[in-house]
Length: 59
Image 1 (tube, rainbow, N blue to C red):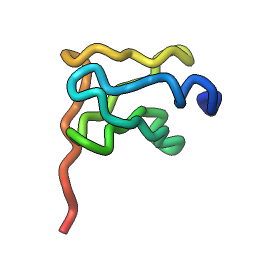
Image 2 (cartoon, helix red, strand yellow):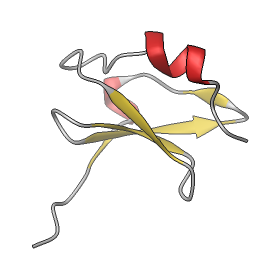
Image 3 (cartoon, one colour):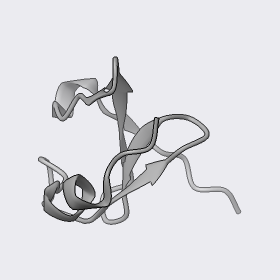
Image 4 (tube, one colour):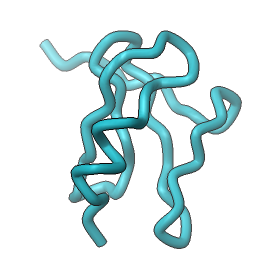
């Protein structure tokens, strides 16, 4: 289920306060600054730094 635009506009990464982008394929919120990826469980974003994964950059 897609995240509402209004929610995405107010959410920020708890680690660096960067902009989040919804990855609809993996149902995660990805930070564009620090490259953390936050899971969405039962349609609720889990915005805990401890739950985030660091995204690997692809060459």
